[in-house]
Length: 414
Image (cartoon, rainbow, N blue to C red; front, side, top):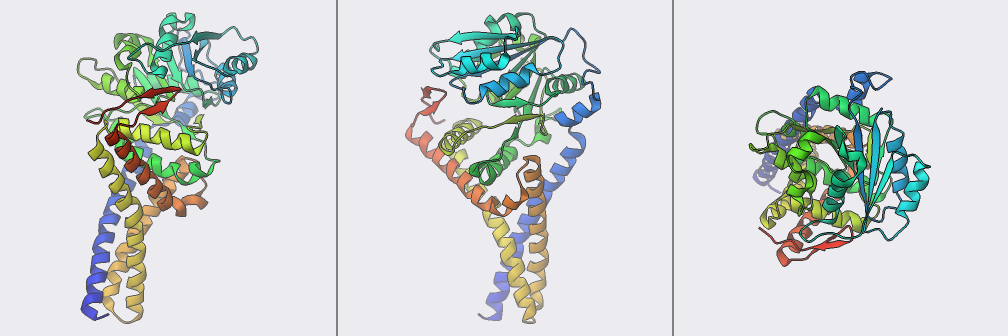
């Protein structure tokens, strides 16, 4: 290899590494800034002190509504942890949505006769509604517990609440005067796809909806997470609740978008649960694939071109950029060893890019409670995530229906 060719390669690697260094440097700065001014549920709990009830008026009754379609394997822990919350006036409504398993038996056993548990049997879904939205609507409109509650808390059946979670959420919502407070739950990470693929999938979600954009006062990006949504009931009723989003597969995002409109103009926020609310999103790999394809399809508004661009962005930014930084630093060092001073440039820039990338990923893995030993496998998870995005685009383009919660939904590309 001649010197001009070698110099061109090294300069090209340095330029690409510079782009990566700036990109991950900006992300790092935003993450650090957000950690400083954005609270988490855990910080709200610490502000309350050990009792967890320092600022809650006695009148703030909370009705927790859980939709459940064949959730026998997880419902008991959800019921137990809800009923264990230290809230003066707590009600729990479980909507059994077309269940064909023993969800009811496990729920009743976990409640052990606690009169705060109310069960609604739902055996059908009206035309034009998704199954989950119909179940949530019935819980909010037809239950005794929700009829006069001050707040409605919608959680999924696979959610586990740590002690003090609900009182801390109320405290945080009151502190920031929010009509809707949602949480990005802490996800479990004891299965291979949760440790290898899930960090990359969540990173792409965070790139689309960074929390600093979600929680600012102007040009707010609409984000909520259906795993945990705490409403002021007056606000929920004012926006007509789930009636307005009855056909949406991501009702959480749709509700946040609705609250952001000028006509509604209600305040919402989304924060990290930081260990106080835990969720296993998907119990196996096939469900994980279907679930994330559904999420990405709806987040990107059923646009094939957006899904394809997101897939290529993941490949370029999350896979190629760190490889380029490593290659630049390595080849630069080799060039320096052979006496070529131009090697300093890719070594310095590549090292900075790799450092920024590593720090960003370390913060992400720690936030998700994923052991750092799996961090070197992030590019593999990113590759799989990009393939999920590409397959979501293909499914949408070919008109493949989405199967979820015991129902099938046809989705047309926009």
